[in-house]
Amino acid sequence: MANPEYLARLKQGAAEAWKHWNKANPSIQPGVEVWNQWRTANPSIHPDLSKADLSGALLFNADLRWADLSEADLSAAILRDASLSGASLSHGGTNPDTPLRGVPHRGGP
Image 1 (cartoon, rainbow, N blue to C red):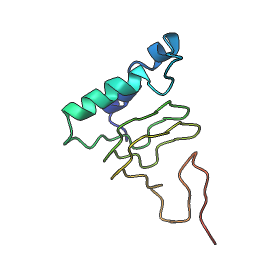
Image 2 (image 1 turned 90 degrees about the vertical axis):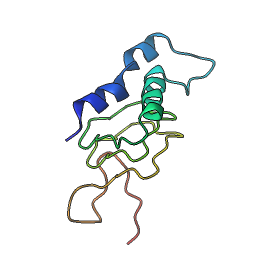
Image 3 (image 1 turned 180 degrees about the vertical axis):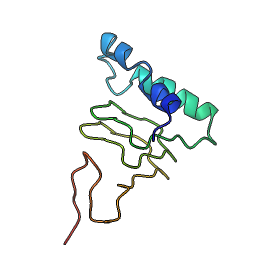
Image 4 (image 1 turned 30 degrees about the horizontal axis):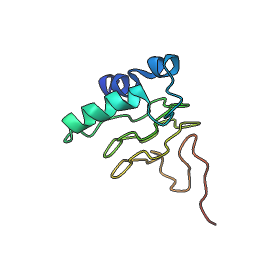
């Protein structure tokens, strides 16, 4: 289950991002900047965001390296240029053909 502290840090500033939308550079989100600064200061932490509801989250350029995103709901989340190196994106089930929640399945036969 997602660690509430890590989830709060990731979402911190999201409301302000909408209030103070930077039209000159919409890919910079204040909430993500706060998260990325925290990640830079704490590189050894592997954030537990498992089963987190991140549906619709604006995560442009988010540093999600080594985060546990297993069973997280990423439906309609925007992860453009997000760093997912080493992140756990498992579906948590026993069937490897089961897609992640909210992620279109593009597997072969």
